[in-house]
Length: 44
Image 1 (tube, rainbow, N blue to C red):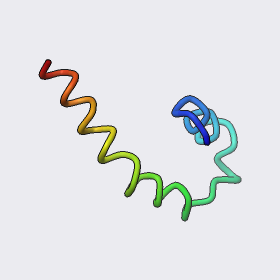
Image 2 (cartoon, helix red, strand yellow):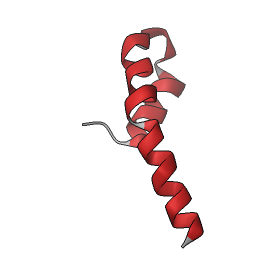
Image 3 (cartoon, rainbow, N blue to C red):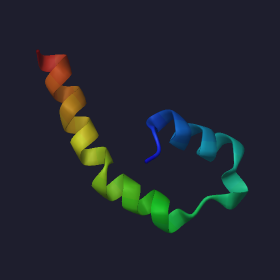
């Protein structure tokens, strides 16, 4: 499992090797729960 830092490093440094299908799936499945967690933290 990659961390957020790993994902950032991959996007910044290996952008010619990015698998857009994996990037899109990550955006659809992992980002919405992350946004909800951040909102919860900001409201507490």
